[in-house]
Length: 504
Image (tube, rainbow, N blue to C red; front, top):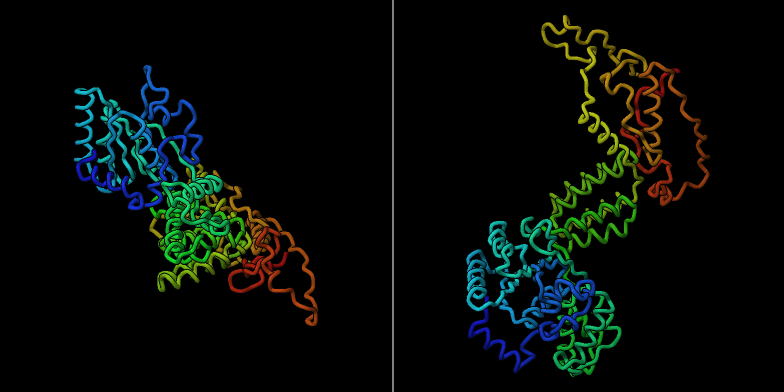
């Protein structure tokens, strides 16, 4: 809200005793030229430049903006620069504590200030993603009629968290995490500047590098950690912030991750794509980020089960069993022990041979059905268990496969519209190479043709010969196309379809 007597007193105290404010607040830029990074938003004529009065005038007024970016990238800083650089009335609200009542009070005040005094109002709304749809709706008339110029800040993807009418009435400006060079400049400035530490301590390169690592592009986190390290050094009478003092003062960096936002989906996507790409190390990294951020282990387990079928399939039929077993174990034991089970499953899936043939097959069949390629069920396959079915010709001519050697009857199963279509196109990776041979033999028999002979297999090596190292068994993970460690169902060397033992 607008400053009151107590707010003014607090600001006066901070000005007389700078140390009463956090270092990140004291080092907040006062002009756009002091802002570190975000140069793509600060070019001449940009919306932010116009909000501070640069290039103002003419028929085109400043636009409302939504600032979207990770924490610590300068969203609040930019709003405060606008508040100091313009003679417009500036009001600040936080969606954490404000509601529709407070928004309407601001809008009413803005209309009075505009009509009575000719002063325009800039409304800074922090954490706008915390506003409900109804609360965001209350902003629409004011933004549309420009009773206020809105600066809204959010760390969540606005396309998910901000209503479309408000998005269409505002400019979306995306802030990027600060670069290492920008953060380094900011840290050095904070150490020497009178508003910061004023040269009370020095920052060696090793400690500076550690601050950059734990900051993760977040200026506020970097300055907060710097202040903690400086306090530790000064308390011990040290002239510099040693790496040891910094590590003692700052335990670890908080994980940038929100279970309800787009980072949740980005990290989950990266986990699955790393498994698909057979990079177990990268997959474990993303798993660790999800665990550390408090992700629901059941969500992780569900994603692994999907990956086992979508990306591995019959190249390793045991992958789905592994993922399902992991999901059951996670449900029984929970964190922290479930991390071990999830880690084992992630490694197993990442190193398994890959095939998306089953995924492509079912989607191709679905596409045909949705396109109208269905047609009636062939008469010989129709149900004949009700009275009168035989008179309709149902099941007439049906051949019972178990009555034939090999268990495969040469008859039509698919409707006429898709007869002869091949949905399943097996790869030659891992165990699916064996399924590919079986599929070809069965398809030939269904057409009434003699199935092709299986390829000749080399004789087994003498027992005295050294066995292949266990590590080579999973060489197919990178798609080498040889059989992986997964055996076909039933523990046999190849799937049992009743065809291979049949005479040609």
